[in-house]
Length: 242
Length: 387
Image 1 (tube, rainbow over the protein chains, first blue to last red):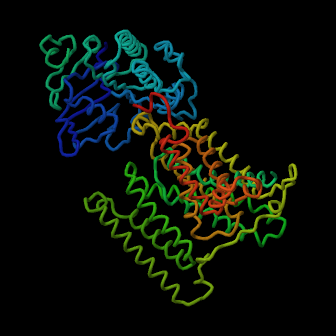
Image 2: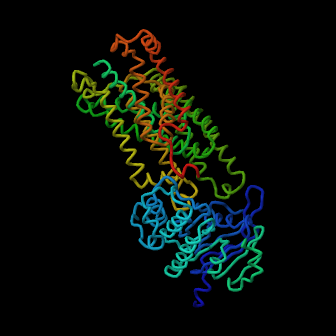
Image 3: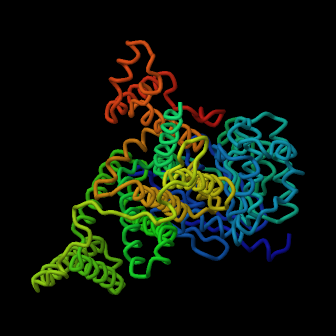
């Protein structure tokens, strides 16, 4: 890694405070993602990890603090505008559009490209290389796939938008081990080949260890951070439900 | 037998009118889940647009007048679509996910539309123009400093109220001049009549001794074409895919880069436009008035519920069924066609042989049907439903 890429950050979050009604969820969160790196956000259930991702994509609004993405401030932008700036989002519930086909779901991934689905009709075959099952099921309805297949579809859909920053919310939750491996390999390969940055929320230790930096969250605040290689067993035990 | 066939044709054409009216509602209610009680009044707007276009074509001479109807259909679609988009942007948008409030608000809109058509006159239009222009201009050119203050929304409300007052003053000032022709309402509360162009009147030939009345056949063809158009738009076009995505998962669609606000407006606009076309078609069947909507709105919802919410095939079958029941039972033609039927059966048929009693029969049928299939004829199937 050269020094210039090390100093470039794709996402700069500082002093972020988010509320659900009157309950204070995120407290003064600072987080930085270097360009081309995978950063992992860990923490036990209910500490605010998903809320954090939702705030970055714009489904929730912060009460104070700033989100700087690729040199622009993201305040007051709707999720679809953020998607068009190159933020891809794979949500925890996977959120496959249920009553349209797998092909149509994949097409919708390209809506964030310039011109949207009106101009982009060709599905990049790389996603079928990563997840062969999708090619086989192209004409099935998204809602009829199993959980693991839906997860693969959700990641493939996000990748087709050629994001600069990919937000992954617990991509291995409730998924059979063989598919977890596929997903991990796919994400690794994408980072290597395209140089995108990834913010990963994860409980699966194997996957966490593939990231270069970690942030640990507790009761809505960041309590520990650093290179993943420095993650000690005690920290892991404290923040991961292994 | 001939009689039954011609009644069947009649039923199909009644069903086609229902289908025309219900297609728009299938989009607005079936896809978006908006209970739009003003749907019938949007049909009424379409009917009045047809009337206006007809009157605009009248001075152009007999030859060109024959062409007014296609123009009126297109105009009815676009005018009602614009009304629908305006409604969505100003009112419905604030009420997504709140069916009760939507119900009340759209009912209010329907009352406003009815009264508007009854009493619209030149001074009134001028007054509304004054209000809108003042309201928009003043709010736009307000200094930025004031706009960012917390009391800005209240100020905007005050400005609109003031402009509305000025508008009312304008109306009474112009009315006060006392020019009879100027003050006369454009349409008034009475029914209006639309003359069908010559090529629609009369018979379009006959099959096996049954006359094919032009207007009925035209409506059947029109509703079939529109339904095909809607099916194509929803399943094949780019906006159709966006609409289906947004109606099934709004948040994720937004995160994928779909401008959900524009999709909502376009969906509602298309649904409203179709109501307008239905209204334009209804003008062919007889004179229409400001209360046109009330006659159709219940039947429309009935068709949607019976057919299965969000399903176009179900909408077709349900509307045809209702149309045929209404025409065959309601006219009592079964009695004439089968004079030898047993006395008990004849008594039953006679009992239901009026238009209002055939409605009773339809309601009994629907209530019974929904006991066995509560989600309609073609409910959604598969894993996605349980999720």
